[in-house]
Image 1 (cartoon, rainbow, N blue to C red):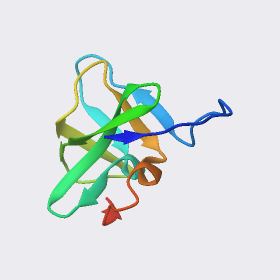
Image 2: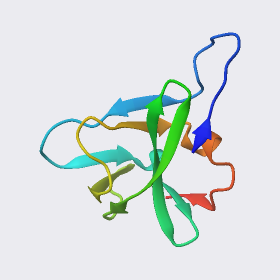
Image 3: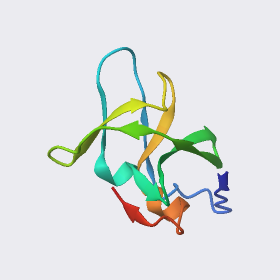
Length: 93
C-alpha cells in the first residue's frame, strides 16, 4: 500500500474516479500501470492510503482501456497521478 501525507492539507496530486454500477468500465490509459507481468491500478482505501490492485484489461482504444476484472462498483480508482504513487512501475499501459 502507498500512503500519502500532506501536512499542509493540500490536495493530493491525483484524480480519483468512483467505479459505478453495471456496464462496461473503461479508465484512462494513464490510470493503468504495468509492473513486471502485472497490470495494476491504485484504489483509494482511505484519505491517505492507496492499495495496488491487479486488473485484467482489454485492448486500449482512443486513450481509454476496458477493465474486465479487478475493480468493483464503489471502488475509488486513481485515474490521474497513479505513476506518482508507484514510481517503480515499468510503464504506463
